[in-house]
Figure (cartoon, rainbow, N blue to C red):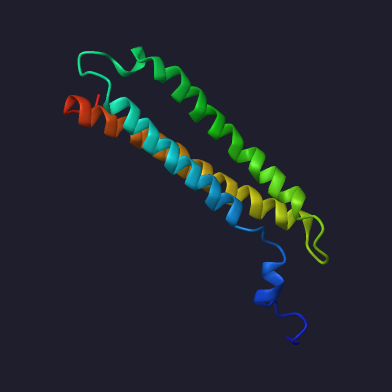
Length: 126
């Protein structure tokens, strides 16, 4: 093999998108999960969480954050098109992978927050 055919780390970085938008997105999920726990722990134990006036808002916010993940992937992919020598398909794969991992982690945090609320409020997970 000649030196020209061996891929280098610089070649691999040309086909990846920035990680920072996804880290910021995951930080938004962490803040959301913290607010969910903080607001729902204050609901009295004799009242179901879904009867709380904040429940509908929390579910809408969680669904909105879930929908934002794929949109963020698409936006980051489009923003990275101006790179020379970069494969758009490689950039799409990178953005989709990072976006799906961040969305999966965020939704997992959301459900974990709801389980923590049940554990703290009722002493058991429903």
